[in-house]
Image (cartoon, rainbow, N blue to C red; front, side, top):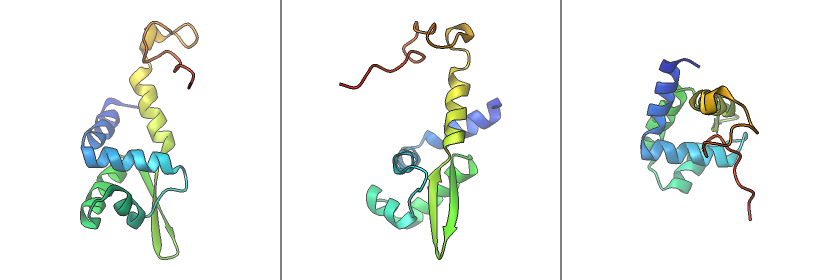
Length: 113
């Protein structure tokens, strides 16, 4: 990933409503949600939601698919993982797990209790 793409994606997520939308779509999984369900879940007006969905789609963070007369939006997990990889690619001097345990961002998460 290049710096321009990373900057575009991070900028799209640097807004509270868009971040909430994206997190909701990640939680929904690959099947995604339609705008009505997203609007209800987040308490966001449809017009506002439409604007933010357009911004996330422009950044390449979400996809849209038509099913009958409905549009479903879903997180683009490949784009999300590419952004995370870009942000951590030089962590621990390029070492990979399990040797990269110095920085908590690179270390494996602790087991759930």
